[in-house]
Length: 434
Image (cartoon, rainbow, N blue to C red; front, top):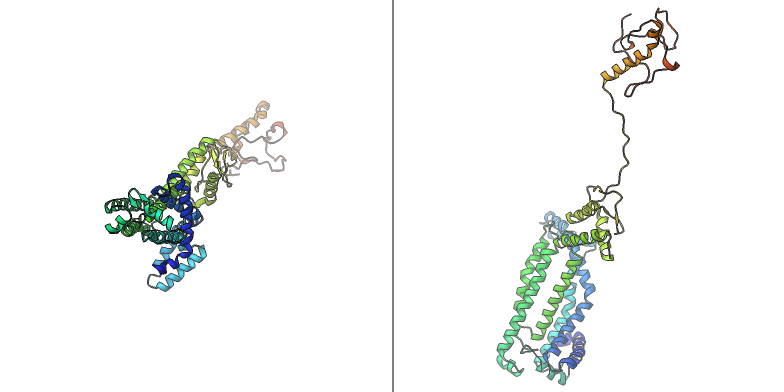
């Protein structure tokens, strides 16, 4: 243990100093020798550490989502090189390098917490062994040994003997009841946190081995905590239960406000965002505008929930812009394209006149010719319909040697063609024999 203490001395001294500073604060309120003063000091240590680890938690979320995105490609590589493990590893590393993804990033918060966890474990174990450590002197050591949390000493374990527990001023029954309850709560909080991640914040459209691994961890982690929890002092159980509760609340906040694309949490978030945007006809804060901007930028790559959100805005007479803002559409009912974006309003087409049937055009030509020959009727001569006979008059307008005179044109020019009739002289249906 001395070797372990020397290895963790660089972190046990700062951890003990932080605990002592919080103990001074809470000791002035609850009393220096109470379990509330020492227990709240450990809880405050957890909160301080987790606040410092928020940037790593953000990296963990990004890394986890990047790994979920890469799962289809990773599965293809595994199937392609299933008989060549070395080539498979090389292709995996190449894929990570091209996408800038680090699989270890998802473990950063746990790895960063490990030194503090072992340092706190060693501090509490030294208190139970009546050894000073860090800045905890003999006076603070005696005060910590007197501290009880619900009747269990701060440094007692589930596996301690009755004589050791009695030396700390408690009974073996109280210690085992308190430690058993805390171990159960610690395991349940870990299980609920993992289950919340699997059921709400995982892209259900992609079935990959990563999801199976996460589902397995959902049942394995609580068992690990239950097995190793019996060897943890009460103070360490307080630390671990507090950090599990913090992780659960932090994850609930992320799922509620920044869900994974394609997950059930995103469907619920976009539904809330749709109600808010349609009620106010605008995106009210920067986070909502960032979400809308990301959805608009995806174009045809939007998932089912994102297309439903954009189409809903379109039907409500609203249009999502590329900068994330929402404006009212010019048309009352906008038309959505295949990718969910509003289609530009097309200019109205020019209406063409309806073409008349051939028989109607011929009858119309005959009527025009007969009305044009009305001058002959007044002069006492009659003319036959020109649509069935070939005119002997040349195109130059000079009269031929026929006995019948051509009918004078009304107005000195050509007769105006009716609607749907071709302009100019009409071609006869069949040439007449001379």
